[in-house]
Image (tube, rainbow over all chains, first blue to last red; front, side):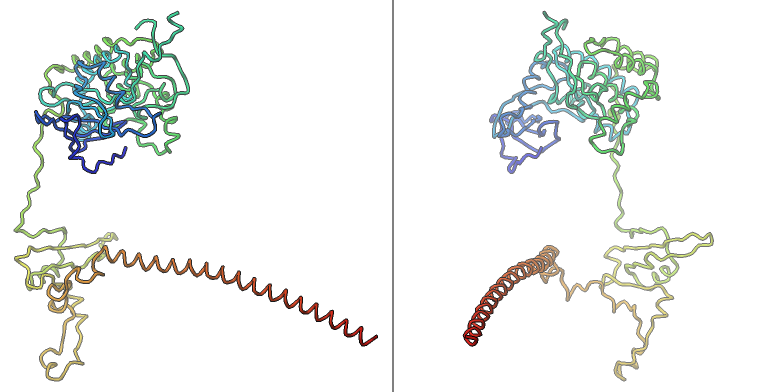
Length: 176
Length: 322
């Protein structure tokens, strides 16, 4: 999605998050680096332009509500703030490291050991997400990230833009 | 979780990424928990092998989903996990064999990978990933004092010339030689010397010796006094060839030298020509219409007058008869 950010340096969200350069683009919206003005901590912010058409799904807001449900899980990025400002839906998360696609580009192939370590963390993580009645629906290397700093050994799953909640589709017939 | 599950639906639009999507996603069935695990499996294959069998297919986007879906159905789990231990096959057997509402046994799936690790004596808790071994970035060392030799071959002529002048040569560019084996060898040699070694003229061209001799000419048109000093002139004397004269000619001095203005200049000429052509066509159409109309009016008048004249003539004839 093409975002027209002419003066991205001047954009400040929630009076605390200063927008900086772009990192990547997710399934909906683009991801930028932002800086916490007080702590100078670098964070990630996901922005989606609010379209004039009201029927459009505001997936970033939807994602933020979903992420609140599965917050505090090890392997889910920490959410700091979400809201709508400057005609953008914004979602501020902790900044993570490289994604697996980028790592694969560097290393060409990953070793069996790394695969086992990934599976060892990802299967329980997916189980926990499923327990909260959420299906991710788009698991791919681009959406699996390695943490930064202290969490450099934690595998994260991001981009719940096209995931689905079970609850909204409860099968009523089976209950009766 | 018991008793509540997503409603089974079909003909859903495709969602996700073709490369890692599960089979039921290709079929257009509502996705369930097993599909996340199936995608995870494909992803792990991709990471291990650096690719998947349904990658780089030359099909258009519309058919791609169907074709990839069929490929995923047809391929056996053993073939899919060629380079993997048997546990990976078991993973796919389990995941693909699940029904829509089944609750996956995550512990079983995890245990498969733990078993692979045990068999290969991996320590899964030591936190040594492929990317933890950081490599030093390669730094290209550039020696500015030595001339950069771009070619591998240096011809004899070049060696000869090197003794006489220091120069920038583009010597025997793309010359084809026949080798005994019948192969054609392309000799391209280029040598760039650093500024300190070049002469004041910066760019000098030295020809290969054989060409130089053939291209000698006698300067007969110069005056008799001069001719005694330089009756024979070489085409390729260094002082004669300036690729770029820094004193007289400055780049960008005239607007035509500026690439941008040159582009606009050409564009304008092109545009004007097209405009003229369009106007001409309009002109012709308009004028031809008017000419035609004028012609028609004249004709009608003529016909009218002729009719009148005829009638008058008839009347006169009648009068005469009477």
